Image 1 (cartoon, chains in turn cyan, yellow):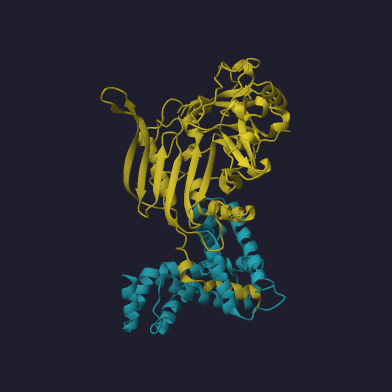
Image 2 (tube, helix red, strand yellow):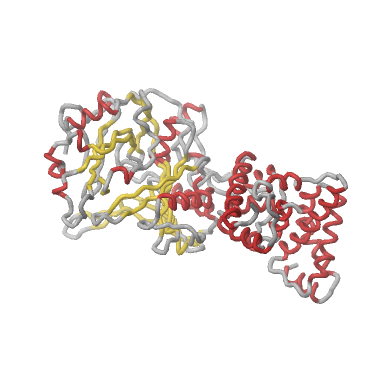
Length: 183
Length: 413
């Protein structure tokens, strides 16, 4: 079913919207949650929660890209669950590694006070990257795919992916420092 | 919450337009790939690097417009024995040279270093010496690969022929041979592939992200590096360079206006391979009038040449002695040379080059001397201090292997 039709179903409060979402985007959202949580049970719960979170969002929301809309909800739910699990000493898939890597981009001396400024700066920075580099960065830190998976996607070595990510993280840190965000 | 956690959350809020499709197993593309002639490695390398006859359309991983022949890095060294011609070909009019206030202005980072001693260097036969060499099918294959690397579809194609006129009472135009294929793509990108394997990609209003300066005459060296870094990454699939090394340099017009050139080639760990890549296999980007990407020239003379062996070479000091004795090739008129003779004071710069691609019969190493020319001969409206540097070539291969260059016979002018 076309995305526009699925969105219409949500707006019409038609419960088949959830069924159609599951059919079309269940696997997509499951991959994102799985990357973050590495737990089948937690992943399934996150994906199911995604449709209900979407149900509560539409209306009033009208997503531009439905996949990203669902994916973002799943990601947020999975990260929340990851943090909760971490507090309870559960494992955490790629997320712990990604967090470690992201600590290279931003200091901890001064807390980030304005997330909107950080988001705008990040969008500007991402837009300045080549498409390939931007995609590699977002596959890693938005979808939280493993380095191995990304290297397969681009038919390049894992070392090349790591090197690319390292260069982007360094650039991002320099950029955020110039912008006065996260010293 | 730590800042890194906040950053992780904020990445999740990134503009949805920027979010890529997720990973999926990469589909193997149905594209043309040049395949090396089989048999022993030796045989493959000798002829092979450049044999297009066994092009196929197997489902294989994409390896760039030129397929698996992007580099001649599997060349097995053999000792050159064939006597070769060394004469250089010149363009139709004018002479080869640069204008600059100082020779350091047009310094390209030639990987050749005068202090590194070498006994021998590879020589190649130019297979496109008498014709444009590549067939229609081969040119079309390169064009299709190029379009694939750019992610655009081909809308139409047209062949161009090298025509000449037979002088007669009623002159007749004859097609001498296939010159190139011109391909129009879905996003108005044009691709031209000629019989020497050169690819010219011409874009239509291709913009750069904001913050980059990409011009002929208003871009600093640092700005040029920044834009070349971006272009090398953006067109990585097209270049297929494992380790792209980019550089820019400037030269000047008669009026002193600066013109910057933008290049990328593939850096390796091998000194000789780097010299070859620098001269044979590179990309040149050029801007459009609005600071966008005008186009890309890709050159890969490996595709139309055949390795014939490593030949002993002379030293730069020996070559210098030759040029001072009047033994050189140059298109510079004698009356442009100060006092009609090249002197050591007039030699501003020396480098080792291969003249590829060109119409020379062999691609061989030359010592290229940049000689400052007589200021009296330069264009009268040129600004004060602007120098004209003529290019003078001395074959690097020892003269006993050359059929047409015997030092002492005087080749100057």
